[in-house]
Image 1 (cartoon, rainbow, N blue to C red):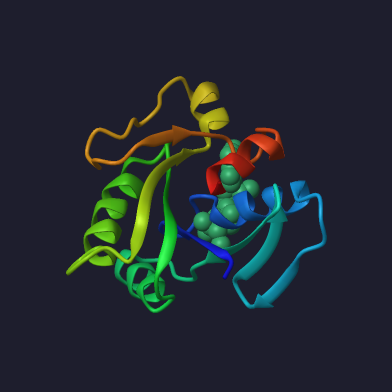
Image 2 (cartoon, protein in one colour):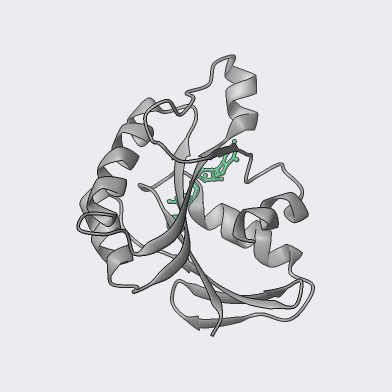
Amino acid sequence: MARRVVLLGVGGVGKTTLIYRILGAAAQPRATLRPGVYRIYARGEAIDVIDVPGQRAAEVAWAARRAGPIDRALLVYDVTRPETLNALEEVAGLFCSGGCPAREVVVVGNKRDLAEELGYMVENMSLPYPTKYISALKDPPEVLLELLL
Ligand SMILES: Nc1nc2c(ncn2[C@@H]2O[C@H](COP(=O)(O)OP(=O)(O)O)[C@@H](O)[C@H]2O)c(=O)[nH]1
Ligand SMILES: [Mg+2]
């Protein structure tokens, strides 16, 4: 069975942008299994990347729970918008309520490029998971791919 990675986060934080940049990096052909599920092959492994629809926290969390067991959940927020980190706390709480369906959870602070331009960045101090800061727009695809592996 393919490794399953789900991206969670409220609308506008850059989930789809991140997936499309990674798809561009996959050396082998990929297929869209159904809307929002992309299969890629990287380093000899099949990975299904699941882009959960929804704008609000509850919507996103429940859509993700319906996806079944997950190897890794990437909790994505926008480092220039503190409210997206607050919303992520709500998403994480609902997604993992009564037992987390993801074996691993990683927080992803996106839009680091924009934060550098603005001169401030919202760091994750509230969610107790390892955190990576990235730019889905500017980082090389190979670096972004590491988030899935
Ligand atoms: N500056 C900057 N903009 C980004 C980055 N990632 C995404 N965006 C922009 O943020 C907006 C929302 O992105 P999208 O991928 O649709 O977010 P989603 O709703 O989480 O899927 C788009 O205008 C993207 O171009 C980033 O790393 N840096
Ligand atoms: Mg999207």
